[in-house]
Structures are given as structure tokens and as C-alpha cells.
Amino acid sequence: MADRRHALDRIDTTVAHPARRYNYLLGGKDNFAADRASAEAIEAAMPTIRLAALENRAFLQRAVQFLAERGIRQFLDIGTGIPSANNTHEVAQRIDPAARIVYVDNDPIVLTHARALLTSTSEGTTAYIDADLREPQSILDDPELQATLDFTRPMAVMLVAVLHFIRDDEDPQGIVDTLIDALPAGSYVVASHSTWEYLPSEAIEQLEAANPDGRFRARTGEQLEKLFSRLDLIEPGVQSVSQWWSEQATQPRPPIEDVAFNAIVGQVR
Ligand SMILES: C[S@@+](CC[C@H](N)C(=O)[O-])C[C@H]1O[C@@H](n2cnc3c(N)ncnc32)[C@H](O)[C@@H]1O
Image (cartoon, rainbow, N blue to C red; front, top):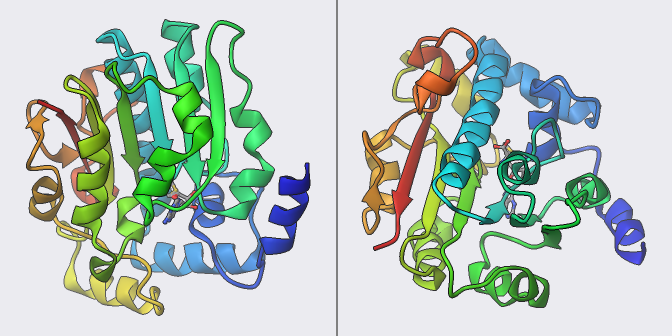
């Protein structure tokens, strides 16, 4: 409870935050005027951004299902966001109620909603850590994570729509490598990442103008693949989130330029 009060003090409603902006794009209510203005500036440049957010979210759910059906029972979901429908533990525990999930986010608003992420089945476990992906070793060393996940057995690390908030000078490769180094063989890493490679140059100029602090960093599919080059990629490698395991998608698949998010899933050797 003290954590929650402290989190409320840390919330700055005057500046757009990724978790609240994404919540707005998904149709949620946990956002403020600055988040909505930022989302609308992005939407002016890329009118399909809401579709893109929904497709990214649907990818996350298909990826959890894919891995749970292949026997993965432990998930470390970093940059989890404000709880929404079908969070990682809900999808995983539908397949095996004993699945164990650790959620991580550094936004205090997510901490204030963490209770919704902690609704585990009695057979499984969920935990929430208020931590920063830019300090991956402190996530891995967290006592709650250590008590929840068994590092002698395969697990999945989910980095869904979070790596584009890591600037080049914050060493995204070092962050990814630190996480991969901690994983036992047979584990998976799942990532999605914004890309501007399918967008016209006028849209890119507008998106750059909507990112004045440079916190957001789109990357190409090639750059995304390089971050995970140590892994055995699940076929067919990098592709649009909308196309990933598309046989399982419930809606018709939109064109990849309307989605502008790439996905990758790889396995630790
Ligand atoms: C676009 S949302 C994605 C939410 C969820 N993974 C999904 O794809 O549906 C990005 C999330 O990453 C979180 N985030 C951004 N930078 C982070 C960091 N350095 N450490 C931890 N979380 C971060 C934001 O607070 C936000 O909740």
C-alpha cells in the first residue's frame, strides 16, 4: 500500500507517458490530456496507429499462447503496460493454471494498477516489480523474481513494444544480451518493435516532430534482428506483428504498412 501511495506521488500528468498513451490508443480510460495530445499528434502522422496498437496487443497474446502450447510455463513480461484484456498470465494460465509470471514496468501508473496483474490462479503465481529495463541486472536480481521463476527451467522473456523506448546511447544490445545470458537453454525471447520502414517520408517527418525528447526510437526489421542474432529465430524470423502466427488471428489481416510494428521470437541455444 505504501508503494502505491508513493507511486501516486510519482505520477506526472503534465507529460505524456508511454503506458498511458498506449492505454488511450487501445481505448482505455487511464490517461490524461498530455497523453491524449501526444497520441493524437502521432495519429495525425499515422492515421492507423490505433489499429497498430490493437495488432501489437493481439500479437502479444498469440505469442504467449504459442509458447504455452510448446510447454513454456514461466514468463518475464517487461514493459507490461496498464493491465488490459488478456494479460500474459490470463492467456498462459488458461493453458496451464500453474504458469508463473513476473511483470515489470517503470511507470508508476502501472504500479497503481498492478493488483489487476496479480489475479493469479491458486495453482500459479504472478508478481509485479517496479523496475527499469535499462537496469536489466537489477530486474534479474530482484528477490521477488528469484522467488517466482526457476532459472534452471526454460522461460520466456517478453519485450513487447518496449525496446523502442530504449535509445541507442542506452545500450539496447547490452540490455538484451544481459537478459539472454541469464536464460537457460530452450528459453524464448519475444519482442515487438515500432518501425517506420513502411511509412512515407512525410509521415516520418511528422512522427519525428511528435518525439521532441527523442525517447522514442523506431528501428528497422534488420536492426531488430541484429539485437537478437544470438538466438535461433522461430520461422520465418522478423515479420509484421499482424502476420505473426496469422492463422490464429481472429480478424482479417491488415496491410503491414498500416501496422508498422515488427515482431521477432527466438530461442536460446
Ligand atoms: C507501448 S506499452 C506496451 C505494453 C505491453 N507490453 C503491450 O505490448 O501490450 C510500453 C510499456 O513499456 C513501459 N516502459 C517504457 N520504458 C521502460 C523501461 N525503461 N523500463 C520498464 N518499462 C518501460 C511503459 O511504461 C509502458 O507500460
